[in-house]
Length: 137
Image 1 (cartoon, rainbow, N blue to C red):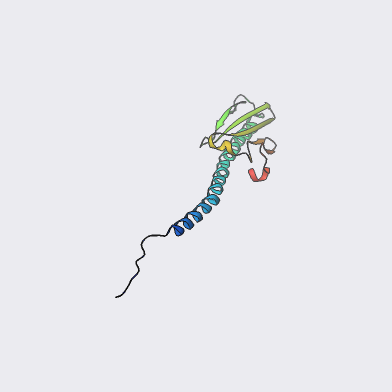
Image 2 (cartoon, rainbow, N blue to C red):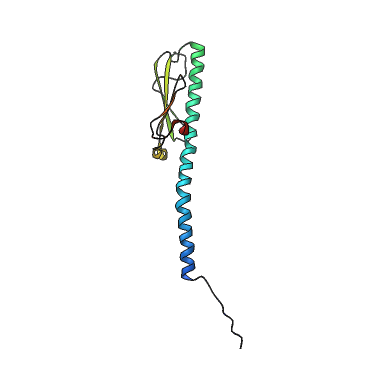
């Protein structure tokens, strides 16, 4: 008689090893993915800030003041980013200065590294978070 061993399925040890490997990979991949998503959304803030700054500079070139009556952007105006993850607030204290501040909204509020991004008319960039300004911008 010929005996043949037929193995069917997986042993419990094999299953536990595979589950352990999958758990370790998940623990590494998920936080990295979330950090990448948060970083990608910051680009949304930079786009809105730079677009608003460009429009304000155009006003200054045409009318000689950031707060001119014919300028389409007003002091205190809030501009939402395309995805809604940032709201840019325009502060024009006088005719020669402005500050644009992008505050995180929705899921982006969890971005504690950078927090709010801001830009002045002189090109000074700042953040409210704990990370380096260059990394956030």
